[in-house]
Length: 351
Image 1 (cartoon, one colour):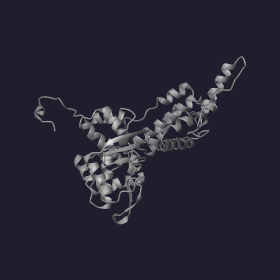
Image 2 (cartoon, rainbow, N blue to C red):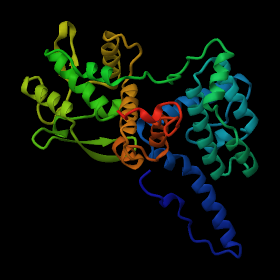
Image 3 (cartoon, rainbow, N blue to C red):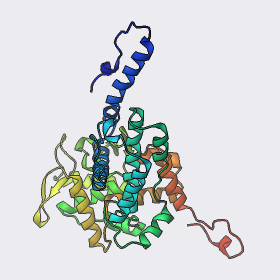
């Protein structure tokens, strides 16, 4: 959709013109509200939302209530959806063994699209309000749910991140002086020292790195903004080694190269899947099981928060659209008994 001309009412000259034109405008706007919403979302977000809507459609069909249209594009698909069905969907996901984090994300998607259906006139105000009142599971609730069921790992959300120490991070960045080792050192520095998302690393081009200025400029698709980071000493060192080796691709090409058997490098460009697998392999080599790129981002944010980084600065540097996540990292990094007196703690020097 390029313009909104399709919803501009045509001239109407009857006595009831305003009411008629208003109703016609509502109907036209209802037809495009889904398209406008989806146009503003990143491709990765749409993939996640479509997966949630497909699961909801599967659930509805399983209880004999197949939707009357495409849930992702039409208001008609939402006619007849009630808060009871949404609540039942939440419990169905739990019974299927989906991770608590996955259940919460899927439920959030359903509520977002229900709001679109409400705007389009497919849901009543009362039903829409009731659907928005269906909540996911909090941390403690989720733990109790998991204690009472056998399968809890369906879906892509881990129950908790793999936590790394500063020693772990240093070891992950200290890779062998080989073609793959130099590539891996730069990869881990980008994840651990800059908190880049997996997709952001995959999208980096050689031109994004300015070795002379010691800076990196890159695009954050999730929030739709371009940022510049000053390279940390470790990242600058790894990037210079990568460039000096002759293995770094040419200008205009992806920054990293694929892996080949035997420790060699392939053509420019590592996919998100390849990066995810490589991080897992590098972690396993150090005895760290199940390490992911997001765990590295979690380490970066936690480490920065523990060092006293202002939440607003952390939000900007991490590419978050709100303070919710930075505040969580800051709260997690706090020493709960800081300031307690009478147990010798006042004699402890701060590290």
